[in-house]
Image (cartoon, rainbow, N blue to C red):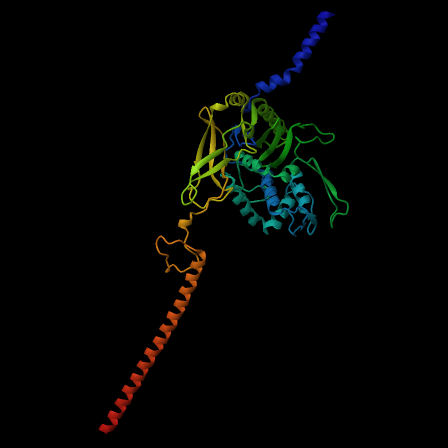
Length: 460
């Protein structure tokens, strides 16, 4: 009996540690998905990538860009939007009809939860007037975010050969979008109730297509306890796509998986693989709040063109995190003296400089590697030196003060007035003189004509 109990306990113990062993032995390279990336959302550090910079079709993950642009260009989500006459019916839709009136909020949830291509088109037309005009806005935003491998044509991601992105670019976009609280709220919502409209008196419920967030009744569960969003995507050309986010113990991760094969066999691996990636990331990496480390945060630089001789700038450490392997993070915490700071200016430090202006960056380094880079913010305003300012912008440049003479605003104003009076008088005198000269010339011409006329008459 004792031997039986001992064997049973050994079996239970072995079974209980199996998940931990799996987490330690998991290799991201085992994932067959062709385009994969795992990014730390706080720092933007890439923790793992495979084919992430290669061109791929993003399908409906495109709607991440449409959503964040809508939030930035239409802050009032309760504004009512009228659906146009040409409603998108291809692919997945939320079921809106022409001339239906819905709030921008309902359209955003319809676009992000059930991947409504009709909602995306309506949003684009409301904001920019047309899909093509909205695509220009999308590409401008992509360029500003450094998405160099991306080109958008449609707001919904319906397939176009010239509509493409990369897993890396979509991770950059998602990292940016996740800084918007309303965006995070939308993409993390399992269900949304669409209120009644002028075309639907009952309203209806939308369910999120991201299986990491919740489990629908009578369906296999892929729910992941740390999941926080974001968006699925499916087309024949793009395959099965997923942009997902998760957070655990202060570490925020973004996973992008593009290009899993279509069909039932390829429908769900994107959810299991993203969960494995997240577990691997949480197991091996940690995030360290930089503001808690006591790093050098103020720096002084010389300035020119001002009565002040120097300016102080502070490192923007609030909300900054250092993400690295857990061993590296532990080493940094144990040896803060080993962290050095290298500053780089992004502008010439010449007055004027405004308080709050970004004047450079500071890179914190450990063992010759940059672990964090943040902006340097001017802590004070620097004005142009008094000796470099013209006596009075309204005064004529023809009037100059006597060298070494003190400048007095009141007397300078008087000098300006005297100058303009003199100038007007001179101009009037010139006009009068010109008229006198012209009059004399005219009288001389008349006199000559008369003499000539009389001379001709005498000869006759």
